[in-house]
Length: 295
Image (cartoon, rainbow, N blue to C red):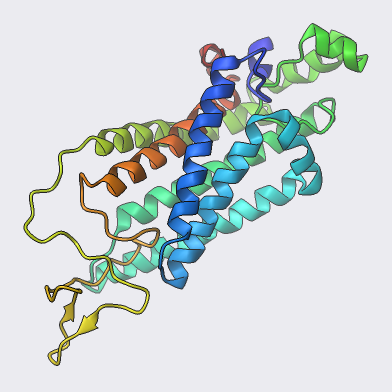
């Protein structure tokens, strides 16, 4: 059952491509999240962008054992599960708000709200699966509460004084049909499908042709656009500006094909694909072939 254990804490020695790849992906989305948080925005946008930044930082910290171990000691894994469950609830509220707006005939970005709800739900699932895996191992990984695919190498066993049987037995049990990790793998299938599918969509969107429009969208400022005596919203150059759709809460208006649009889509791809790549080890109880993605 080495395949089940290989994906947990990544090292430059054992999984150099995955280790470096995840660092690059999550470092980029962390930097872009900082950029988004620094823009003028409403309170709702600031909450959403703060949650995005938190997720990016946590995912970046989870790549390396030397960073994740002290962080998980400072904030225990069950606490992270609760934190991201609450964050998922925030996006659930945005989805409900967007749905009500759509029914009332107002513009609502339902796709945006659903996408971010699924993203944070996937993160909550990932962390909960890590906690279950750690509990089933009886704490043998010494605080390395990893991603369901930790490679207990022979060197590691010698270093910690454990025989192969000490860690192999609980992990073999964890892979059996009907076990807790097996059920977490089954539950994770729609999340992993969403992460990979969303990553592909974001990457394609990053290379989409620019919009052919004579009047590019005007971002709505925190205080809202100016209004004429008739009540019509006007942008800085005087053209009409539609109210931002409910649910589009994370960033300013971005014309398709603009540099900020493309970079934003690349960041979205980096987060989704990084989460997918990091989560594949949690599905090895039902899909052992995913062990091949740790290299």
